Length: 220
Image 1 (cartoon, rainbow, N blue to C red):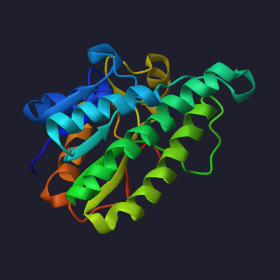
Image 2: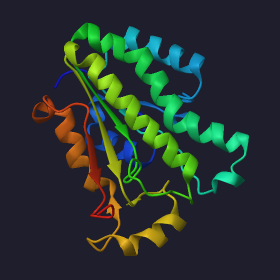
Image 3: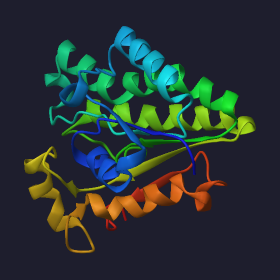
């Protein structure tokens, strides 16, 4: 694989793991690292323009942005709703619509989004309904994008992690959910990197529109 890998949210969490693995090829967008706010349309357009001028079309986008918050639906105020949807859904829309057209012109590329294990199943998510609603919508968006860009050689896939421990993760939910994991432990960022590497590499060239759940059996 040739070309740059754009990692949004690459200064922490899963994104930081991708950057550590592919450091020489990665360009990071994050509020902490360089002030790029992927929920801001003007900011994304400006950052995308600078990226394309410097690097051309990215080979891959690994979109690692997505805030989490536990709050019941009826206690979710307008600001929290907008924040969770902007972070988990609107950001993906903005990044995709500004950069994927260039990938289509280059007739190659990989896009990886992150949902959450169980986001699409039929069980209620009363502890974090806004978050899971955004993740389910993101998965639908990813499938639609995958169908649209497949003729141009661009693949789009979703990884749906379960409990994954990293410095930015939600400690209370992890403590509650980890005992329910059939494999007996929480996941780590390293547990996800193999799947990410496969989707970025030659072995992933024929995989698109798919959702890979990596959760130690939590959703069984």
